[in-house]
Image (cartoon, rainbow, N blue to C red; front, side, top):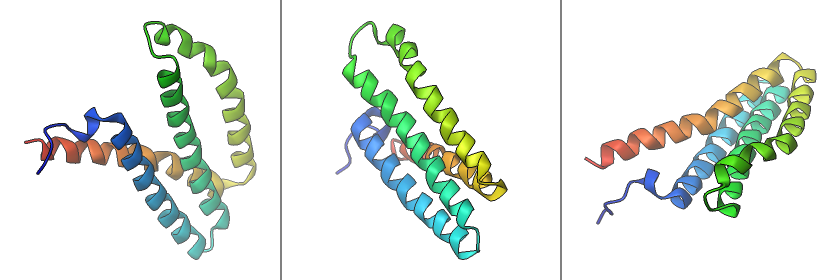
Length: 127
């Protein structure tokens, strides 16, 4: 028996589904890159997926922590701590060479693709 609620309406279920799908796809793509002889590309995929997952988790945690009316005004203040760390990670990835940069971009796209696929799937199953 299906519930009347979409996966998109339940943040905890959505987060678990995106995390699981991203983990499986990231490990699969990294394994393929490693098998094709691109270990830096495999590492880039894992770093990219982990970084985007960290950002999504970071904002989810802040919204949960700062529940209330002032959340929208307080979120930009927390960017001061996030961006220097992101720039350090991107600098390290760029120093790893072209395969790592391409892997990083693929790793960032994977969670977004999983979330898009879940949204499309959820829209079709609600009909």
